[in-house]
Amino acid sequence: MTVLTLNDDVITEIRGQVGLITLNRAKALNALSLGMVRSLTATLLAWKDDAGVKAVAIRGSTKTGVFGGFCAGGDIRFFHQAALAGNPALEDFFTEEYALNHLIHHYPKPYIAFMDGIVMGGGMGISQGASHRLVTEHTKMAMPETNIGLFPDVGGGYFLSRCPGHAGEWLALTGDVIDGSTAVALGLADQWVESARLPDAWEALTTLDWMTSAPLDTWIAMFSGAACADSTRVRGQIDRYFALETVSAIVQALEADTSDWAQHTAATLRKRSPLMLHVVLEQVRRARSMSLADDLRMERDMVRHCFFTAHLGRSGAASETVEGIRALAVDKDHAPQWSPARIEEVSDAMVAPFLTSPWPASAHPLRDLR
Image: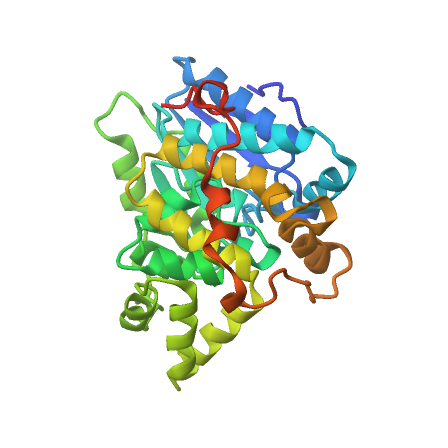
């Protein structure tokens, strides 16, 4: 049975007793639009109360078929255009996307994310709350937002801060890409599945007998394999350097280390938005003691400040985020003009307002999240 959706970029159907979702915007690497967010939300709410749906599975698609790519994030070209035009849909996008992320984390039925290929940014938001997070040898996972003058949102503060040691700070600040095996080791995935077996695993879900005991456990045992050894062989260095108190201390310590990994990591951080690196370090450390709902409210505050940086006397094209997107995805000159230009030039007074809500608690757009 096919379910009518609000958006052609999201295909949904019910087969057996499983609701199946396919992200169908392959030309944009399944980047999430506001229409897709609304379609996903409407579908999940409908299935939440449908006794005939015992579980939900979600996958991406590519130009050549299904699987091979999950979701590259939010539609950053839309962010750029909307910010410059003063389009209020930009505000709606983040409010509704974060509410969707919360819904997935608290979904009352099994939610199975087939995290094959690129899983970044908003793609993490619609998969990290899954009860079953499957990765493959083709998974490329990251929260690369500091590269565009943004921060790891969609609950990134919450789920990255819960990685072992200080891996969360490392991933949040650098935006480094990890593979499926590393994702399992860092608690960002549950099972490793060979990509060639994904079609069979998807089809097998639709034939499960939900009257039996723990049908998903049997299904997982049938299709999951042993992940390769954790490819993050520098966990000791990550924990040592990314535990330091400030971004400046982290970078200076890395630059004093002559190892290839430390030099590469320091060079990466020097390319990111200096301002947002400081904001992100504070975000992750605050989120470590927050509930998901409180983290999402904090991130909603932060994203408002990213586009309307009133305390810095700039917004729109002059904001870090719009400039970062311009350099990466619009003009593609890969030469963002960050302000301040250096990590050492960022002051506490520039950072603190990002963590202050522009709304009273009673009027916060995510006030109803629990």
